[in-house]
Image (cartoon, rainbow, N blue to C red; front, side, top):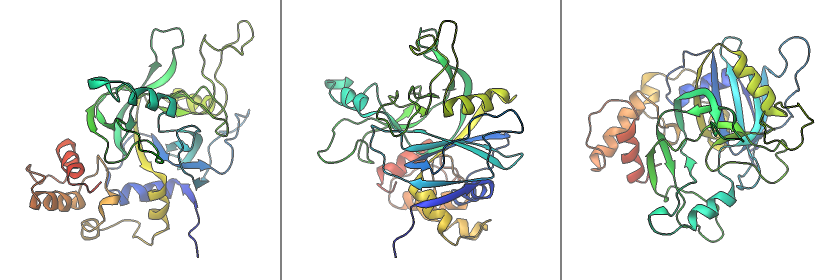
Length: 315
């Protein structure tokens, strides 16, 4: 019997995801998550005049295949104080037009200018502006730290961009989280050369659809933006994971709060950059035994461990 491509996400499920991926619990009240290759089954509710519109106790998502032309990812906010979440369609992969332009560059510039972020837990998104100081600038969560990403140098016939065989880099590619300049995930096109984007229109003077003096956010991005900018919180942690893995993990009958012993045998697919604990120690020992890792056994999946993990071909 085929496995359903649909899965339910709520506060308890997100707690379980953090446990399964061996991640420290964030202390912030608002936590961001991005699921690559999934879309909400229901449209985000527009703002209303009473209560807290847009927040839901649970949402149903459907696993879909990314095609680098349409927005086929889910970006969300988890309010850990209330246990509620808000989700919106968007993208965590660059648009194919940008990928092709970057891959067509020659020599050392090949692949530059466009990238795809690796799954991971990052803690450095800060309120700011995308394309700061430019006419098309608009509100965004700015990436202020470093993370792993890949550049596509060779596009293989019949396959989509980016795989674990593409070059891996660590640094700051300035992949912010901002508006997609397209409110409809069913319509082709969105603006990303590596940034995470949420469906909608931004508050920007470059908008051509506005009446004189009108300038405002629209679509799911408006709700996403308003929730974050209404919060006193200035920076936000982000967990980026493949949706297919999350769906499979949540369907499995794993313990909700794994013990130290059970964490130590969790498969590598349940680890990510930023994971820590006995499962990471186990990975480090495996990598060291094969000659890929030469550092201390720290139990933290940081830069050197991730590079060794990638070199061993286990990611």
